[in-house]
Length: 260
Image 1 (cartoon, rainbow, N blue to C red):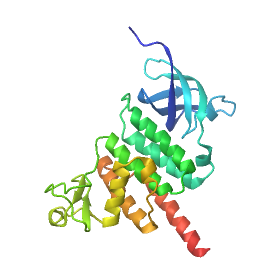
Image 2 (cartoon, helix red, strand yellow):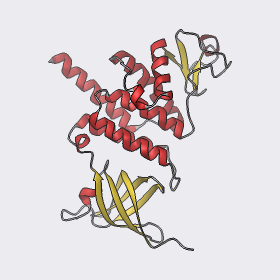
Image 3 (tube, helix red, strand yellow):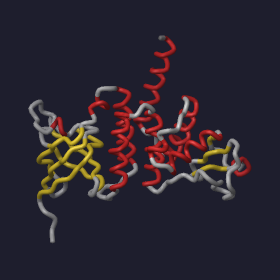
Image 4 (cartoon, one colour):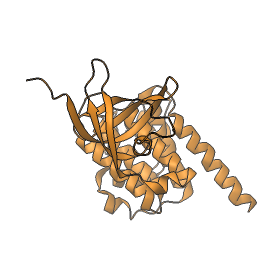
């Protein structure tokens, strides 16, 4: 039995590509269909009725009509526009980082309901939580697990011995933490303080309500960001564009605080 010509799904817009003078190709992440694309005719015209429902970082119900090569978007209705994200440059950049990672770590038409829910929960938390950096680190670790790249944080990935309570080393190539002895054979690794190891384990193994109680200062936050960011870059074999933009904004904010 062939698929119905018309169908509808929840979706979050994770990428937009301009096509011609006014058309667009949109990439969505959905709960049951995975990552899909759709053609939106005249979306960029001022009078487009669907434009507001198909912005980046918008959770909508989207209707499609099947096409030979690309399905056409026939309607959309916003479920959650995540307005706080769009009213703040820093939060918007965090949101763009989230959807870029989802786009990079997923294949088309591969259902991943858990990751869809994680993405929605993360965008909601960015609108509400005080510690945005903790929200991002929690998302990264659980995205990695969903994609099959869960880092080993409890034992040495080389000798498999339990890690001592000391500075150990994170190796992107090995996919986890190395003890000081094994690290001698892995030159490209990041030193990881005892506190960073403890917090990363909490973020990886506990639910968000427990992880949210963890307190981290700027130095510890930066340490964890560098380690996980290095692992993401290694896996993708390229920079995450929005991560570089987040770094720029972060430096500007720090400079502003120093000069205030």
